[in-house]
Image (cartoon, rainbow, N blue to C red; front, side, top):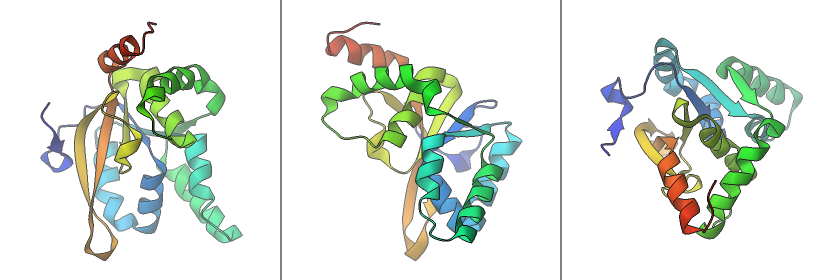
Length: 179
């Protein structure tokens, strides 16, 4: 599969959803000028932004003052079009946990729920993160990468991941289970 950068445009299909990982909220909140063009591009392509309630909690726990928390809450509400409650994803989470179990890695619960959006919604849900170890290549494909000029002259790479039904089915067969 050819991996492209976002700067090549037209590499993110229109009318999909992008689920944002907590790291996106943190970086965009602290460096809004660096994310402005990206969010404009997303809206132009009629892409909706989503996340899970657990990612919201993970993001908001980083603020120790009422004002900081309110600012973060406002930013969150302005950024995402909708978020998913954990109870709506329970079946998908259980399936994804089983597929991850033999990988031997620990997965933060917010990322497990975020990944379950991919399983539940298939090709229509992409996941944006810079925490690449959370979305294993045995289950997810990289659609494109988004370079981010982070703080301190560090270039970081965000990736858009898509859940792969084919890889998931193969993984279940390897584990001796079918759906």
